[in-house]
Image (cartoon, rainbow, N blue to C red):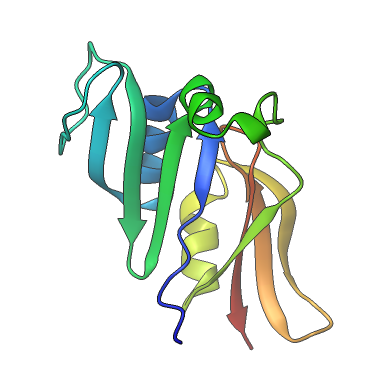
Length: 139
């Protein structure tokens, strides 16, 4: 048995806002979005639309966003979950300095660029939903 891929499914209040944050600040691209109360897949966000789901990617990293109320309908056992949760996402990169420079004035830095005791040069940001994203490079 081989595990193929892990794609976080992040609960958010506003799918469009989340996609825009990751696209504009972190350089992801939109793969697909599903309008609220609709079972169609779109490849672009429309100004006048609210979305239930979206998938974004950059290089080998993919993330799904699902609107909180829709997620709770699909997963009753997670009803009333806190957005942001007690999880952080650690992303290995090949040039942490380049990413740091590109986001440092556009996102909330929660841990500034540093070299950790375990040899990774890393920094952490908080996204527009409160999720913590770490970016790291082996030095």
